[in-house]
Image (cartoon, rainbow over all chains, first blue to last red; front, side, top):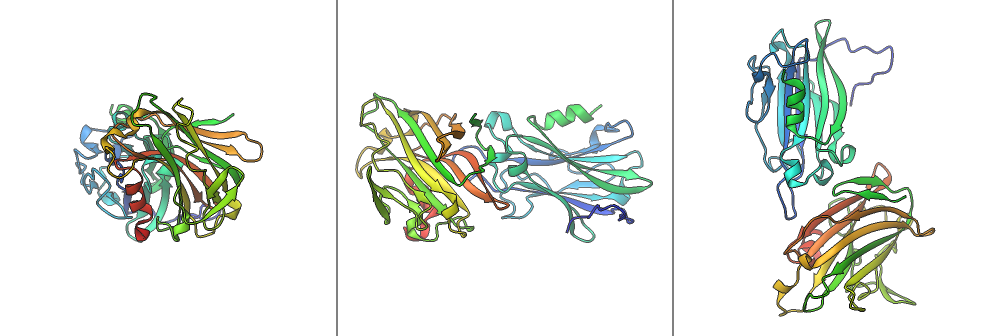
Length: 186
Length: 204
């Protein structure tokens, strides 16, 4: 069950622990493997990383405050059959006070060289769930919703009046991880 | 205006009576002459055919007689395959195309997706290394409105397949109660056989 945002209903309790899961099917035909990557950008008030280590990705699997941690890189989609292949876990109680929002992205590694897009990656999705209750908050089917794209800004956790909330963004781009690095690394 | 698709792209098909056309041009200097076949698989949600008739190809176990010749047909009658040899190089131009008629209103509710493939046929014992999609150019799949003839979408396979002998051109699939089409364009090394092993293994 996703959150019902009908007016008059307020989500009183902010989020404490969340998980971001990325799943996809391995390539069963000839050609390159599909290597999808989930990453997190932890931003300060100025919408930039306070320092580079607040960018959590395959080469930096934990943030300096230990709030965001990556399960590690899956190079093929073979980690799980039908379930999440890569996970980012977020413990919002540990987030550095300078951080005002956390952006989650998913990108295809070397999409241009390998001539790939999300449409080719069957059963690819990204989802965010409340890790305390295991309730899913939002989910995109990447192959359906972003078939010709190679990078998606999935959504963001942001702080309002001391509480963390999630907003789905769903912005698709035809770039790679570098596109987001250029955007958020000051 | 037909939409030109790129590999992986998906579009919604707002019609039930369709013609799926696949075409190609074989290098006229290719020796020996090529025999290309279009085949269709109607798959259940488990990704496999449920009955043998749902592998619609030149050797289908269910056919109907038409003025153009014998045509293979799926178990539910929703997919009418092309006449064998229509896609061959009969006029020495190297060009071929095959038309498959699809009526999605007849498709059995258990059918989740319909896969369209083309593969090179070679006789047992023939030098198989002489047959490959490297000799096949201008391959495309397009979907037409069967009533008006209007082109809905088209995908020109832009990849340089070299040693492969079988290619999945596209697929129709159900999504939230509607039918969509995906430009697939993935290849298989050994022609129709590995494609059959994937979708029809229990009948092999």
